[in-house]
Amino acid sequence: MAKPNSRATLQDYCLRQLGAPILEINVADEQVDDLMDDSLQFFYERHFDGVEKVLLKYQLTEEDKRRGRARGGDNNLGITSTTTTSGVFEENSNYITVPDSILGIERVMQFDSSGLSNGMFNLKYQLFLNDIAFNMGYDGLLNYSMTKTYLEDINFLLTTSTQIRYNKRNNKLYFDIDWASTTVGHYVLIECYRIMDPSNYSGVYNDSFLKRYLTAKIKKQWGQNLIKFQGVKLPGGIELNGRQIYEDGDLEIREIEEKMLSTYEIPVLDMIG
Image (tube, rainbow, N blue to C red; front, side, top):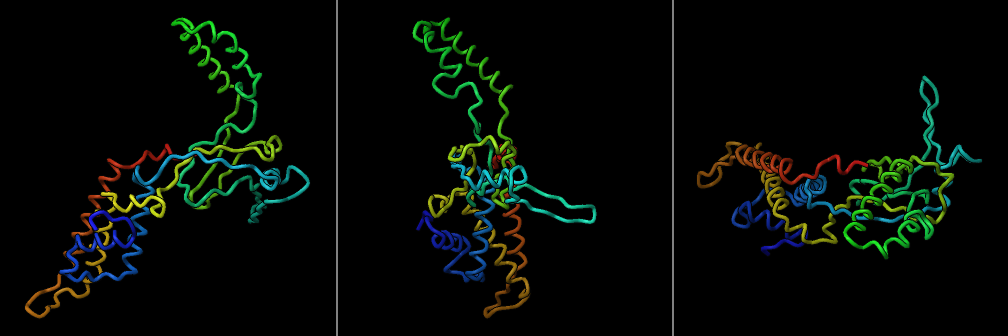
């Protein structure tokens, strides 16, 4: 009971923090479910423990290539047209659909084999094939490191990086590349951030921030539900004060969110592709 590991146990934990079962918490189960979903979304999008950095691979298909080459070949597959008073605007659907659990995409590894380190007979392999066996002393390692750095600089300047566009709300990863040069069956390696889905990682339900945040959200909703009963006296002279409960919950939420933004949030620019 002390360590929530599911939606139900987390809800029970938060209600107990507010006084249940000694007090009746006037919040419907449906409201608690909505508040939990909102709290989890905030946790995913703001807290550094709400996401994990992963590498996902995707194999390009003939359909992807045809859609990416639309208007460049003999078909109009994937073309989206918008007609306005100023003319017709067309957009090429050069994208792949990524899983809904992906929150942000940082980069896509190099598509083609135009770099300096591809294949057995590439420049790096030939350069170090013989030298590495005889130059393992201090001078050799220094020279090796400087040469590797130089080759990486050449590769960076001469090899165009894969240009991408991505927005979480449509789950479409756009590749602004020459699709004619792509190879069907080629694997694309995507460096991205994926949410910590509690259905796979039950430890999310026991996160200290999430427990405090959801408790404050329920408290605010409790006060919101009771505001219309302000001044109503119960048997024994007890008077409901929904507005005070609401204001206390609202203050706690703002304090928690301020600490989140200053302490636990991942830098936004690191998650933009």
